[in-house]
Image 1 (cartoon, rainbow, N blue to C red):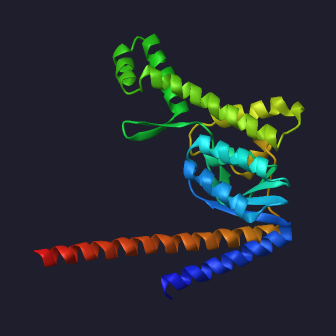
Image 2: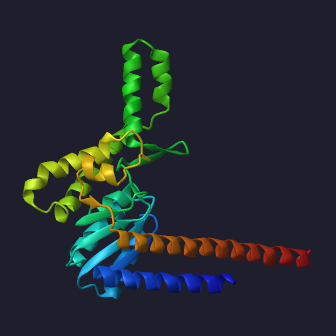
Image 3: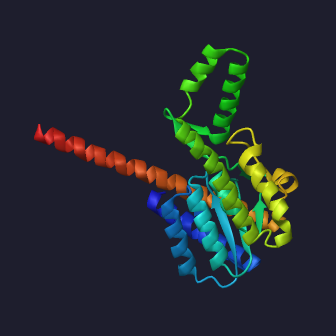
Length: 278
């Protein structure tokens, strides 16, 4: 089966499943499968305007995370644009900044294999990415070594840390992530002013509680530990969510193959041209 035909087929099947899901839920479905970056803000804005949304929205999200500022911007845009119920649906994962975005909704629907993740900001240091919490833990370790008079080890560890200016920025970024989360949660999920303490507890946990950035927050932890408004899909919803998720995955696989074939064809033309010139 040719790739172009396969993509058109699966795209058609995806559109059918989405339309049926909209009829069942009486909502408008938006599909998002990308990193949280500034271009995503424009894409969501255009999509909302194009669909002419009047009622509730089911926002399917598949994202490893990205830029917290962009996620917050998208969250505020959706809160202001959607007049009905705003539900985020996580078939598999919505990590880091994508978790922040999910907290902009009235509720989150997570499958049994879905996962959210902590909001601790990431920094790039000597070619690797580290959590702001990991850097703060390293500071504590250095301090302990100085206390224990292990100055040579403490000095060596200190050379691996970012500059004092960047350390200050890390503290500030943790507070920004908490502030963004508070505003989004108070905008929909916990719009009642009496929930301020609950919202502060949630933001504190998501920003500082978890041991590492890839920590798996499944539906049980999101509901029972974090106290977010999370539920499992009904049996009928579950079937549609998995079918939509699988069709999206197939379309993405085809796109990756097409990109590789295009790159291969381009390289082949360049090589052939070089042979001719030689």
